[in-house]
Every structure is written in C-alpha cells, then in structure tokens.
Length: 513
Image 1: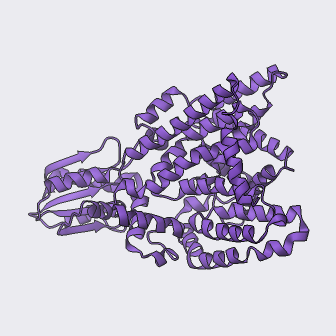
Image 2 (image 1 turned 90 degrees about the horizontal axis):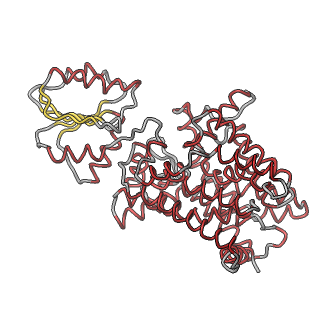
Image 3 (image 1 turned 45 degrees about the horizontal axis):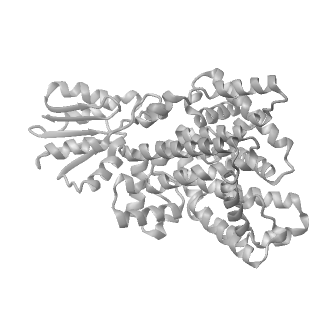
C-alpha cells in the first residue's frame, strides 16, 4: 500500500477505534471529544458570523486580491503585504463568484480553521498516550483565542496551521527507501503545490528531508533527485516573491526584526516569552502563569526528546530546531502570528506531562493535574460564555478595541450630500477604499491626509463654506495625535454629526466650515 493509502486508512481506523468499544470509559471519551469538536466549531462559527469590519491589513490584502491578476501574485505585493500565491488565487476565485463581502473573503480561513479541529485530534494522538492528555490538548486547541481569531481574518494563518498538521501526518511514516514511481510523483506534487499555498510548509518538508539524511545515508542520491522540482519552484518563488516581501517588511517594521534569535540571551528570553504569551493569550497575563506554562512546555519537550528515536518525536524536535536556526540566520522571524502554525506542537508540549499520570503514582499525578489545571484555569466557563457572546475581542485585543470602518461608511452614505467633501486620515485609506467598493459608493470629493502632513495647519487651510466628513477609522499616529487635533479643531465650527465609537479607536465627524 502506498503512503497516501496508508495515511487515509490510519485516519479511518483511528476515528472509529473508540466507537468499536462499548466500555463506559471509551463512551465517556467519545462524548467529551465530540463536545470539544462542537464547542470549537461553535466558537469559530460565532466569531465568523459576527462580521466585524475588515481592518487595515485585511483591506490591504484585499486590494492585492482585487487589483492584481493571477500571474501577478507571483511577485511583489502592494502595501507591505505577504501571502502565498495559491492562497491569493483561491481568494480571487471566491470573490469573482460570490462578491467582495466579508464572509466571502474570510471563508477560506474559516473553513481551514474548522477542518483543523478534527485534524488536531489525529495530530494529538500521534504524540499523546493517555485519553486525559488528548482531551486536555483538544480542549485547549478548540478554545484557543488565536485559533478562534484567525478563523475570521483575511490572512493565510489558519491555512498555514492546517497545512502544517496535514504535512506532518503525511510525512511522519514516509521513508524515501520505500518510495516507488507513484509515491515519488505524489511527493513532488505535494511539496511543490502545498508550499505555494503555505510558505511555512517548507519547515515540515525540509525537516523530513533532514530526518531522512540522518536515518539512511545510502538513499542520498534518490532523496536529492526527488527534491529537484520543489527546489526549482522554491528558487523561482523566492527570487520573484519571498525575498522582495521579506525585504520590504523588515525595512519598515521593527517588530518583525526584533524577533530574530541571536547570541543575546535576554533578547532571546523576551522572544520566547512573547511567543508563549501570544500562544496562550488568555492565560498568560500573569507572570506566574506564564512561568508555569513555560515549565510545562519545557518538560513536555524533554519527554519528546527522551523518545526521539520515534519518527514523530524526531521530526517534531527537528522542526523546532529548524525554526530556531532560520531565526538565527535571519531567514524567518519568530514574530507572533508568523509562528502561529506551530501552535499544535506547542500545545502537545504543554500537556505531554499529563501522560505521566498513573494510579501507581498518586501523589505525582495529583501534583501534575493541579499544576496543569492552574496553568490553564482561565479557559473556564466564563471565558467560553464571553466567547459565544462575541466578547472574544476583549481577549484578543488587550484594550478591547477594534476599528469600525463599515459602520462609519454606512453613516456617511445615509447622510451624504453630493457637495460634501470626505477627508480620510492615512491609517484609514485602505478601509475607505474597500468599503467604497463594498457599497458601490462614489463620492465626488475625497482627499487623504498622509503621514507627513501637518494636520493642524492642513485643517486650518481647508476651504470655507464647505461641509466635510472626516473618516478616521483607525489612527496609527503616536498617542492618536491626529484624532486629538481633529477633536480640538472641530470646537471652532458647526458640528452636524459626531460619532465616537466606545469599543474602538474609530472617529467620524461631519461639520460645516
């Protein structure tokens, strides 16, 4: 049987193995895991149907999807955006068939996040031995705030995570020694196509290659030959797209550059702390909890290393080392969402200690269970209730704020006069252009305040005897200076309509000068 057939046969056997047993313990396990699946689905569906406004980065990516043709996705993207070409192609196809609504643009990330729930179950079964460990891991994955958030963001991060798990499960038992012509053809297709859909797939692919080199030196020639198509595709993709995108991002964002590992121990400690805080956002605001979660992860990694002779454990550690090496070499940043795809491994490491629980080690088992429950105690009923109510944003955004450019545009359209002029601050240009298309709205007079503009002076120089709309969906200026300047300036004029959105930094103003 080829490795593809074995992969799907294992899937089927794993899925139904629990159902074949009639004892109460397995029945309880099936009920619990089913509940976790349903909970994860409901949380993601709820937030997806919430239909929040697109924020700036999503709008920037939309403009690439909308304005570029299929071939141009292999090349420099506008507005400092980075996304794999097949992901962008899929998005463009969806918009051409179903329009440019938020639910359409976010459908692909949503579907990827839903499929990831059962895939994580199979992924966790690879590493975890005890039913309790599997339940803990799957619960944390189902309710993880980042997993829920990226189920409704126009970005590739949900599909990156899904592709990571699929490729890992696909490759873990694959050996170059037993590959025939059919297997080689399938391998070439997968490594070439999937990597164009998810750039982070290269970490799994190259980790598998390295593992094959370590396992058997006699197959090096064959191993090298089957990589040629993928390496050619990677070279072309890197020179036309990746290198350009990496350069423009690093040249304009200190956040990404600050997350490269180095010989600076304190800086590395900060990067690791930031990553763990990001992975477990809801449970990491306390330094004590952050330290406890870190200890659990380190202990879990040590248990995996202890059994490194197995394929899955060896590949897991090689992937961690490969990501670390890429960061040291300044190839790949460890900045938050950029490493979101390895969350499944991090969760496995965090709960692996639960495999040590045994009736023979009652005291140790009790200590382990208390430590795990305390470390993740914020994933409680209150958290789930708030998530289902849509308040997940207060977990995701520390200040509980998110922009509302859609609501602002609706207000303008309802009150707009053809003689009105609309002024947009630089931070809101992308959102304005998107919702202009969304509503098929064509105002006659618009202008934008760019970052280098002197906002107070520009406001004073605006033409008199004119009604103005000020569309401030977001404000990236230090301490929201442009918004504060606008609020102070408007006191000298006749305000017709003013909207301050309490749950966001959005500000809409309509006045007569």
